[in-house]
Length: 283
Ligand code: GUN
Image (cartoon, rainbow, N blue to C red; front, side, top):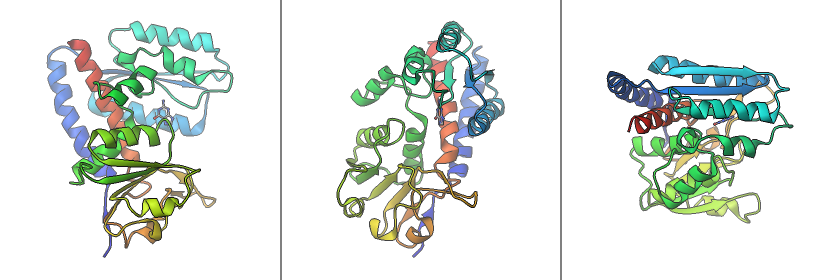
């Protein structure tokens, strides 16, 4: 039997409609959510992401600012820009598009963003809050994964979730969120022996390692939910995930496609974080 496909675009559209209602209510109370996106340099992929973020803001009626500065911008200049937006009342979210040019220390920039406006959820205090279960702005892609699971009736509670990958922006926070949702969580990585055997025990398998088509059908328990966070560009220009989609399709119970699975959720969760931050600022 073929897996049910998890269409992230549809779920993302539904969430955006829900957000729109909340935004209208907030606006009636005199507050418009505001997001600033800062892009340093002219990386083509980053330019596309930044445009899409601005478009989402427009669609939901947010106040949005896109600040493009040259690749030669110094770290101090960028820090000064962040200080300005930390203090600016009509801005509730600050996102500095990564990667940054090599002469700028990423950590110094992330640390400088006010934790209240850290809509990426990358600040150490946000990470700490996630870890101890306090209220926090959650990183967008990981919280998108949880939304996909819940909104397809695949609640993680009581399930064995296996996460392949241990990055700070996907693997670790996804594992922590799954734990918070009462899953039993195993994290695998490049030094884990017998990954395929462990993966095959998963009720929920989340993969984010950046290796095209790594996960084959013999890695997947029949009926498992397979969430593919990978986005890889093949030599022919096509996108593919970390899961060999065609191979796994007949074994999995549910599967996300690439593109069109997890991807559309990231910006939607960014919009949700900005709204949450705006509501909190209102008090
Ligand atoms: N570059 C690629 N993805 C992201 C993201 O989620 N946040 C930021 N700030 N930069 C990125």
